[in-house]
Every structure is written in C-alpha cells, then in structure tokens.
Length: 347
Ligand code: NAP
Ligand code: ZN
Ligand code: ZN
Image (cartoon, rainbow, N blue to C red; front, side, top):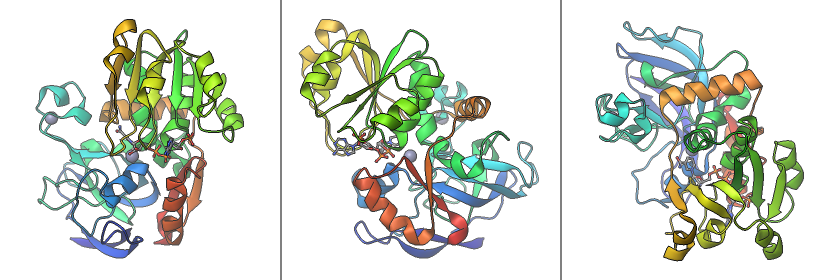
C-alpha cells in the first residue's frame, strides 16, 4: 500500500477538501502511474452531488487521467517505466463476456469497474479517481499516449473525446453525413472537432450566441442558437445524427424534430431527470433515440492515435488543486472553455 495526496468529497454538498488515499500494491499485471493531469468531467460533479443516486464518501473523482509509468508489475508487457499513459472511465472488466470479447468492455455484461465510485476487483475497495498524485491500474486498461499529443491537453480525450468519438463512429459520421451537436461544453466541443475531422457537416446547437465563433473555429459549418425558435425551425428535418451532450433535462421532442428520416438522436448527456418522448416524434420518420457510453479500450487507443495524427487537441484551462472548487462552479454555470484540467503537481 502507498498513501498519496488527493482532493475529494466528504459529503454531497461541501467543497472538495485535501485528502490522503491509499493505492494498492502493484500486482503482477498492474502499472503504477504518477499522475500529471486530470480533467474535470461533469460526471464527476453528478457523482459527488448524488444526482445518480447515493454514494459512499469520502470519494475522489476524475476519470481523465494522464501521467507517467513509475513502476510495473513483474508480468506487465504493455507498458514500460517512463511511458506517458492515460486512464479513462473504466479500469477493469470481466474479459470473458460477449461484449468484452468483442472489445466493448464499456458494455461489459458483468459490469466493468469504473475508475471511481466502483468496486476494485483486486481488493474489494471503492475505486478512487484521478484528482490525486498516483493510481495503480491493470495494464490492459492503461492507454498509451502517442508522442504527437501534448500531455497537458490530452486528459479530456480519455472521457470527453471517446464519449463523442464512439457514437460518431458507430453511427457512421463522415463525408455526406449531417451531424448536430447539442451543448458545447467538454463533450460537445470534442464532438464538433471529431465529427468535422471525420468529414461530417457539423451543426452546433447551443444556447445564445457566445460560442458561435468558437464552434466555427472548431470545424462546424453552421451554428444555431437553441433559444431562437425561428432558427431552430429552419433546420427541422435536416440532420442525420444528433449527439446530445447536455448535462440537464432537455425538450427532446424539439431535437427529434431536427432529424431526417432514419435519423438518430444519441444521448450521451446524463441528467438526473427522465426525458419525455411522444411516440409521434419517432414514428413518422422512423427516427431512433439512442444512448451511448464512453468507448472500449481498443477504441480509445484508436481515437488517441487519430487525434495525434490529425493534431486534434481539446481546448483546456489548467487549474491548480486550490482552484478546483471554483472550476466546478464554472462547469455548473456552463462557463468553461472548454475543459478544466487539474495540474496534479499542485496537490
Ligand atoms: P459540460 O462541460 O458542463 O457541458 C454541458 C453543456 O450542456 C454545457 O456547456 C451547455 O452547453 C449545456 N447545458 C448545461 N446546462 C444546461 C441547461 N440547464 N440547459 C441546457 N443546456 C445546458 O459537461 P460535460 O462534461 O461535457 O458532460 C455533459 C454530460 O455528459 C453530463 O451529463 C455528463 O455526466 C455526461 N457524460 C456522459 C458520458 C457517457 O458515457 N455517456 C460520459 C461523460 C459525460 P451550451 O452552453 O452550449 O448550451
Ligand atoms: Zn467523464
Ligand atoms: Zn465483460
């Protein structure tokens, strides 16, 4: 066991506080990672605030982790000391179910191990996330960060990047596809960059006009202010695929109305409130309402390599440990351009 510094929550409402947490011994297939950077995902906030149900405290969150390998277990073959590596949302899975066998460990039928607020199969403890100095992770769930990516800007790819890349690929976004991205925060801005890089025609749907210039700079061809009913009406029935990244409840009927025949609205935003979906928002145009979570380890590696090759980086703002509580408030008020990353050396 080793003790490392972290910041975490002691209950659902108070600010995060400095904590020390224990990391398990490095097992034969484990990698000890000295964490350099940890992204702040809105899921971190939903989890601590209890939006998805009660959790056990203290809890350290963070599932966008980038660091360097400090030690490897005696049977580790995939990583070496000194490698720049990453850890995303899942840190283990059963490896044997039909989904794991196809590389879809994010849909492990036996329940994968979340990087935080999960049960660690190695020792039965509650997993603690990346807002900390170091983590011990099974080698199969450690990603290689390609040389072409800047480590300080890369962490958000491990969740925001893959969570938008995976549905874009699954629903075949590419040349000739008209993709809408609803909400331009951490996930949304990566959705825009990745959909544009895949060759799709991208429409950003965001509240107000503040993010218009950024959206166009990230590769969108069109920007629609969702508070402008006339502008929304003009694009009715015009999109093939919509990725909804909004962290709050949404009038889903309005967005389904933007889809063409056979269009799909894929929900990745995870608000606590249920959506209301009238049957006739789907039936007349054979529309699909779907959901998607992160991506498998192999797909995350593919996405990292794709971003390195094309020079795609998230837009980040580096914050110190002391600034994390303020950063959370800014995420909650949609005042983030477009992902906070914690410099974990400041812990
Ligand atoms: P974020 O950075 O806070 O972005 C969310 C965006 O949603 C905001 O920038 C804003 O966009 C819009 N929004 C926020 N509050 C709103 C409201 N009250 N009404 C309408 N729009 C609102 O969050 P994120 O980290 O990208 O995460 C987004 C959601 O995805 C969260 O619910 C998170 O838990 C979920 N998530 C899911 C997965 C998965 O596996 N499916 C993975 C990661 C995250 P505009 O200002 O542009 O309108
Ligand atoms: Zn996340
Ligand atoms: Zn499985």
